Amino acid sequence: MLTCDPRYRISSPPGNALPAMLRRRLDDTGRATCEILSALDPEADLPLVHASRHGDTTHTLGMLEALEGGEPISPTRFSMSVHNAVLGVHSIACTQRRPMQALGACGDEFDAILHEAQGYLMEGHRAVVAIFSEGPLPSAYHGHTEHPGTACAVGMRLTLDPGRRLKASGPVRSGHPSPLEVMGWLSGDTPFLAGRHRWQLGAE
Image (cartoon, rainbow, N blue to C red; front, side):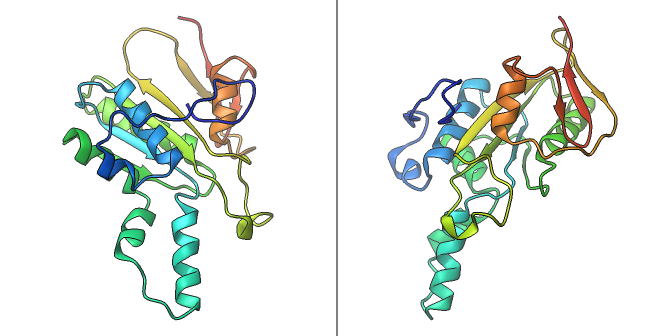
């Protein structure tokens, strides 16, 4: 995980899973995401689902500012601004050819991740690796959108095998969980996570 919240492990992603040429294309959040993917799917044979509410807003804002100034758009900057850019870099680095999904859901990313993963599991995949991340938010966007206040990424390996059960009740539509809130919930800081559904972890 990558976070500045003092309750959780703070680390600077080493990027060992990525060749230097690919690593330079990503910010710290993208590198952390690739590290989590490699740790949870070392054989690179599981479906991957990556969700981010805002994506890489730094690249997007830079392109908007370039357009405003009458400057040409950088093809590299554009290619790294799209929502599936991080999964694309990861797939190139590890020759991942399994299904991959990049999601943005206006605050409902956590619910979207789990429903997408459930679809893969019901199709017969033995497990799904799911990542939820947010990059830094440029100051121009402050006060205009919800954001956890820091760059952060959290990953889960989901399966239908016996273990801690993920239970949903609701729907409740009472919150837009961020990666930081998901970390706190997985760490036991809160008994449930409120999104479109009320999510709880059962005993093994």
